[in-house]
Length: 142
Image (cartoon, rainbow, N blue to C red; front, side, top):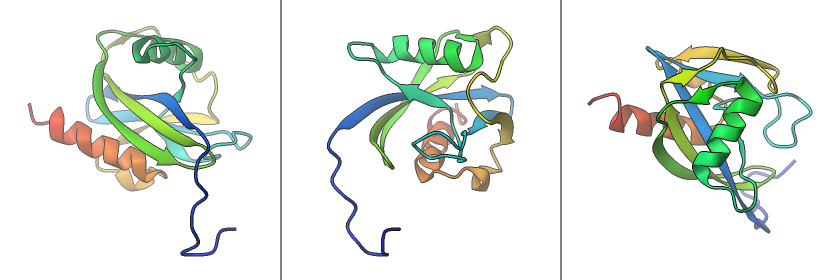
């Protein structure tokens, strides 16, 4: 365990990832990450995944949505990019997905659940709360 105030080790590599904010009405989809995941195990978080080398953000988004939830996004919209330091140092590219085809299946997480935008305290990662704040600032008031 790291002592409070002890420096966080410098990352050796910044990894690009996509995260998808699926919105349905006044709720958004989150996952409880599996315990065997090396990054943020058991966390309640916005789902996403690593980008493959040479893959565009939108291609990675479509691939990850199909792999994890068995859906295809319709007109995903870029939301923001944020840095997240955990077991990996990640650059998370968040996308709003409010229309999709297919029925949502849980193919990777311990569980998926819908949260209300008033239940942000249930999110375990500060970076996800910042992304939700950006969603509310940019998209909810238009």
